[in-house]
Length: 247
Image: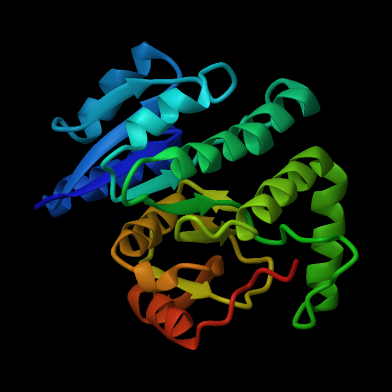
């Protein structure tokens, strides 16, 4: 039977790439949650067999998300305010919207879907600097936090909320800076530095692999550009079993 996957934030650049990858594999059934019905044509262009569902992370109730998640195997969160609407909307979507999805998964009757949450590298308590960071990493972190402080704060609050949950399996993918250049199929995964950037193609490829890796549950996974084949790097990280979440 096809594995049932729901993508929250289905019209995003990474999400559309993921939808196309899953369609090509022909062993997944995709439901894509979008905020505007006019986006459905892009979902169907990526996967003609996909189902588009219009729900708002800001306005739709938890119960509607829970209904959509019922019977699903995996939920992929790849949504966000994208810096639009100021801190108030960033909080509403990136934190409150994420918590709404977590709550909805907990409300699913019977087996609950596993969650793969797309977050970002360096989401952490700002007072806890990872031991492997270089001076360059620390300087880059300070610049980014100065530029998008609200985003970093509310993503941290969302991730912190998730890691405390035990009612369903979850994995957090933490990519670095994103580009639209063609993917290389290679990356650096786990205990990474904050650069180089990584292609959205490669992020989507990692997500597609994680859909079939329930053994990645409970792990936060850093992901930036690198030279190791993605399948090899991801497998090594999961087998090591040490999360990149430092609290």
